Image (cartoon, rainbow, N blue to C red; front, top):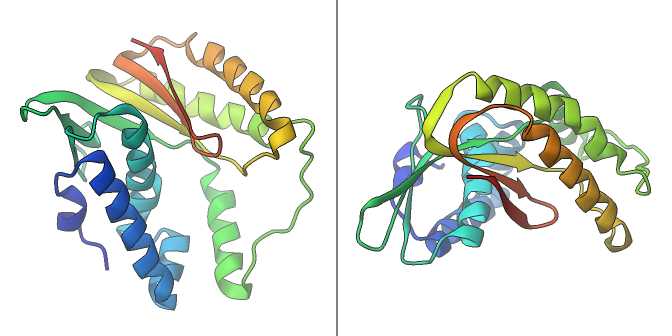
Length: 206
């Protein structure tokens, strides 16, 4: 069982990624814990929504002599990043826009019968990412109402990995999304887009 204390230990990017990988492996070996993870029960919600993407983001951005300190709670940021001298480099706030009800229902189906909702995806249109635009924009508008002037905002974009031949369509759609996001006035130091299936991190503001 993952604990708050385990999560909040300061680690380098590599160490944080290794921690995530190890905890996922341990949870997958236990049916009860695996189901908790799939349903995002208890501490698994923050682990899945924040710590896993945080580990991917930090691997892409920071030198491995920087340390990341995840912080659980309502303090206005999700992690502190310290440089090689132990000085605070920046605060991070992560947000992962998604259809929570749809994801929860699909997770329940998967736990119950071993697979979720079966659908045919139109790879040619990028419709899955297009369908997320309104959810992403709503989340961004809500974030813009808060003061994150001491933080860098990481917007996590996740969808089913596209086939190789269609990746350019998704890159173009992400550029569209970036323009829409930058039309919003945020109170932040920087804005990053972390696109998990394409393994891309892009600083779009600051």
